[in-house]
Length: 133
Image (cartoon, rainbow, N blue to C red; front, side, top):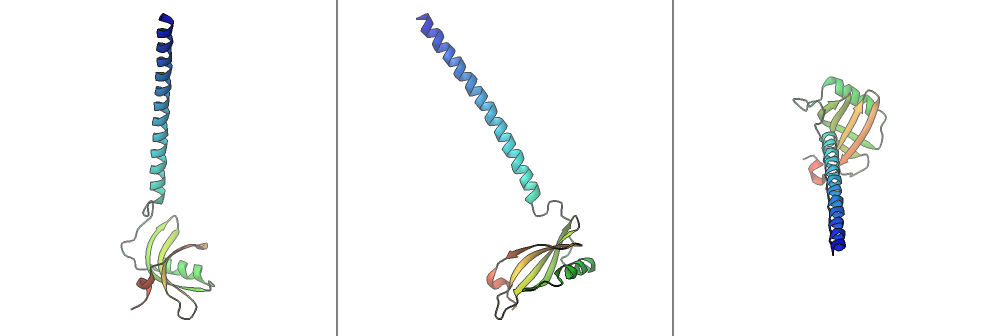
């Protein structure tokens, strides 16, 4: 009887140690997940490290960089609507885009340019909202 009680007690101690180790591992995993989520939020937040302008009017410098970057681009016409900000020399410009094709429907796009040229274009499809009235 003493051997059974000792075995049960030993089994309970082992189970409690395993449970404690599992709880510590779970806590570490939760901390890592929270740190990753925070890092992702900081890097994907639209205004993270961006220098936002007081107004969306296109400054001369941005206009010059934009025109140089878009020179020679064919297939789509990009009309700047407003300057949205700058980060590390990269300018973000909201544009009204129209495919160069009869009766093509316009849409909006975020155009990213810098001194090296066109860096990226993100199309924003908004249907009738992009059409001039």
